[in-house]
Amino acid sequence: MSHPEFTFTDKVVLITGGSRGIGRATAELFAARGAKVVTTSSHSVPLSFSDEYATRIRHLHADVSDEEAARTVFKSCEEIFGPVSILVNNAAIISNTSFKDMAMQDWDDVIKTNIRGAVIYSKLAFDQMIRHKQGGSIINISSLAGIPNIQKFPGFSPYTVSKFAICGLTESLAVEGIEHGIRVNAIAPGAVDTEMLQKAAAGLKTSTTPLDIAKIILFLADENQSRIINGSIIPVFCNGD
Image (tube, rainbow, N blue to C red; front, side, top):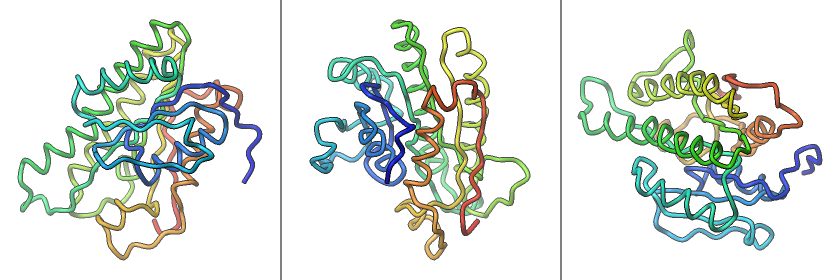
């Protein structure tokens, strides 16, 4: 696989939810294109990447909704590699429970991770990017569940609400980031072959892989390819939707 048009030599990339699925595929693809990558996840089990990427990827354990932990992540990222120039808000959880049977804790957990986490990391990215006067790019991972007038499925109300919020956050921050050279965009994939999908919707088949989505993320992050794209939400109708 070769994409010589995407080069991120010495760019510093921070990816939440980077231990598996879309996050991990994105981390490896950025590293393959020369970037220095920090990933986070709530999983405390140490992660290993192939020798090819080992020196270019660092993984940190952090609860994405914990503001103090996030501050530590940004500080560590700057100390290890330098200030963040690209942020990918990928961390998310899903709860498959009918609204009538759902406990409020289930709702709160999804909203806390999916919305609060993205807000915290975006705010800290803005702070760091503005302080270093380097501009930057933020890519949020939404979902077709967060796009109006597309069929929704029962059992996913908190996830759906959270992904609508991510689209609203993207459009709002895109406006605020203009004067600082910060672009904010989102991708709204349908069914992607990930562990989360299989747990939430066992039996749903799709040929769309995390790498397919990672390639779109790199396109949005690349100033040479997408410098005029800002505030866009890109729906991705995957095989199986």
